[in-house]
Image (cartoon, rainbow, N blue to C red):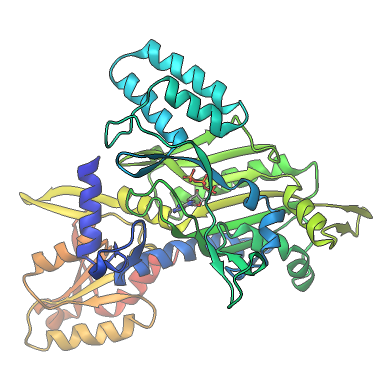
Length: 475
Ligand code: ATP
């Protein structure tokens, strides 16, 4: 698995998908930049999501709310009090760990060593600890009792466990008092909840309806790493669907189905790598919660949460702001606080899921090849355009084709090296089709079209290339 991740990281850097942020200064842990191809791929993923929400459903509207909001928002949402992770420091190595992960890692290591009974016993203790308040003390006691060691230093020298709030704070203006601290939002959802009435009125929406948003979120994560899987600055794609109380389970099931099929149909992700995970321990306000998980090279991990959140968020904002969040149903003449079903995904995590699912090594004519079998709609470059030789008017024909296609599609002209090399370059970045202008083109006006996945070649008329791409890509 590490070797696969290494290949993905290296390809990403070499070809300009993703690289370490501020790398010339040594970078910053868990911050990544998207390069020329990465930004195209990410945009295509986001467009696929945006279309699947705001275009496919006329009762879903978009929003782009500010990252910084009135700090009261985060008191109402519960983030100030409870958006915490239990943290413990190893005094020897000065490294910081999540106390719960440390215990889970210890249990996994016991299992790995074949100490199944011992692992089950600690697991039982761990479950008890999770249910015992205060959590920081129960986790700490368990770590001490089991003499769990720091994975890096192998030592046993801990600070107390304490709750660590994941929200980044920023001082606002020149006055350094409490009131002037703002937070960088840890999720985009609250921007949707606080704007519920304004958006509903402006767009004349009737329940059930949804509000969709794509935007940056920030979390001061203790656990970092795994490339772009867990970042401190990342992007979320969230949709809050407001329904009449009592109808939430119907909406919940509908959205579960829609979201799962989006992964296979719109992103082309392999069905067998997608899994449902049901939350048995629900947050106090939730009445149902499932995650969609994906088989990453390093394990099966969450990519999206689908949660039925009742009226918790609207009720809290009503209470804290003193403004009504109620909805008046014209038909039934009822007044109520809508319930919410949310779908919450991270575009960076989806990027990594798409990339690792697409990464393929195979052999073509005895030569090893790396290709990204991306869904054509996600591919950063849709077509490679190659003149076979830099003479006899071939470059001019290819450039004319480029001019025609690039009004609609992102294409790339390449006249460097052998045709085989040019194919490999495009395969590696996931370009689904390549068109070559050769001697026959000069005779009969046809070009070679080569398919990335099958490597098969056929001929089509030069003036049919655009129609060919439209047919393949704009389905
Ligand atoms: P995790 O348990 O992995 O920390 P979470 O349950 O806290 O995730 P949510 O709060 O449900 O995540 O966020 C919704 C989605 O946002 C996640 O499914 C994921 O795709 C994305 N996401 C959350 N945290 C991060 C992060 N630190 N880096 C990248 N994406 C993230």
